[in-house]
Figure 1 (tube, one colour):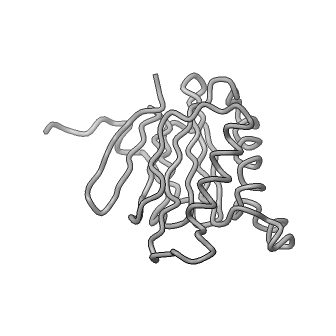
Figure 2 (figure 1 turned 180 degrees about the vertical axis):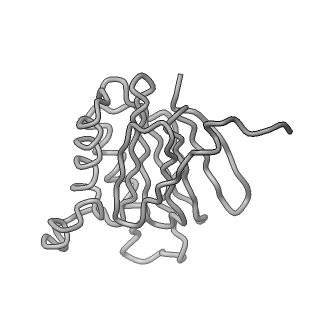
Length: 173
């Protein structure tokens, strides 16, 4: 297999927790979020500036907890999505160049009841992105499995991990 490249030795991982967001143009970072069940992750990447961001939202609508939306806006789709894109603009990502990957929104708890949080999270997220003219390159949403997402800022590489294995794709080039 050969030796790792020098840059690979210094790559750092930033973990984006539930209801959190991170954006950076540091090519030495990988943004990661783990165990997406009904939550939804939105990864955005600008291949020219190598700026990217990752949002791990938990609920579709902040009106259920306006106080929480003020202190933790990334928790909700309606407040977290605008926050993600404002953060990217602040680090020289250009909206027209952004490429997106959306994952999560599963019904992992056999949620056949009235809540269907995963399904609602996906519907609100995809609707907001479409309404605002964003280019969704790929998605892995719905179903009944947990997902983990890694975004490499150097390349725009996405790694999607599920209990069945790992899949790689690119938001770069």
